[in-house]
Length: 202
Image (tube, rainbow, N blue to C red; front, top):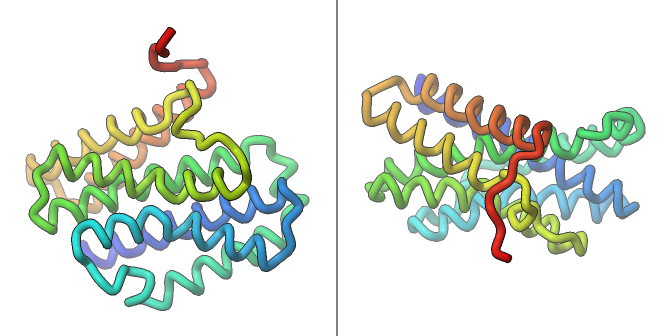
């Protein structure tokens, strides 16, 4: 049951990141193929990097075709309802934040299951969360969000620490994942709303 819920969580993150990639393509006025490609690399970029680092090959999306169909469905829905979605100024932010919230937890969970030391598993979770967005932003000729002054990877780190602690305390992983993803989403949202930022080099 736990593995099924974690897998569904993974599909949710894949869908959210694919939508964020498609929205970025819409803002750049790319065609449908460009939107599918951008949605695809956004959705699988972090997970592919993670799986290659821990030696899980073929990588997840090559072992399970559902990932492909989830991505295509997300991009097509975004393509069909682009005008409606873009009426909400924070649409890209919303789906990107869901993506990093889910993928941070998934990355840590897979790292811990692979026997990686907990602090390093947290770093793997952050990498899983941000890599797809970095690829998306670079391809769109934008500065990746992780390099902006607003809280981004820091939110992933905070949620990752919570998740690792909950697992250490033997909390059921689906509940730990849900709470930790909520922490990431909340911190990221509040940081943008309140203008929180880390100190910068002068």
